[in-house]
Length: 181
Image 1: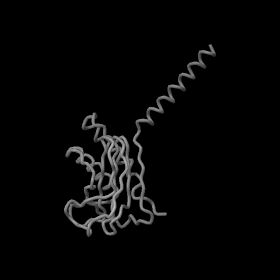
Image 2: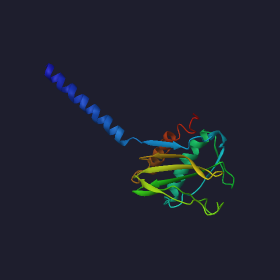
Image 3: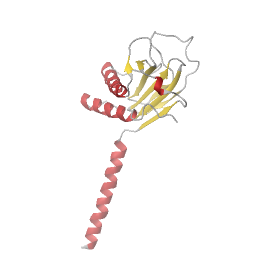
Image 4: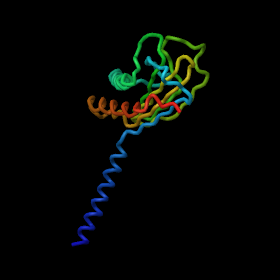
């Protein structure tokens, strides 16, 4: 009888480990990085910009992403503006396939900075990954970047996509703005 109980206990532990592994495998992972020395308390408004070289999703997915980010940034005290003046420029890149990520952005016909950025670098973005970047237009540099994996599955329903996006953006922007050291 004792051997049977030990066997069930081992099977139970094995099933628990498998379940935890599956949950970790399907969980959204987020990473963030901020420019050292940036005073994030000076940012009060933001404007959406297009990342140069990024392939935009369709209009529906674009609206869903912006809605999820807008909601989280509003809880942080930031106000979205469509005007020319904004404290931050916010842009994103989304990969539904393996794609290149670019570090430059475009204001879409607005302000030009004497030829723009001089160099551009790229790296690969994994499937279902959303990269959110924030730029300081006054000094023309990237000040914050975050990456969330498993944000969009093209096979999911619209409701499931929005739920995953909302959850990913909440997790991604949880510690925004970064604490000053």
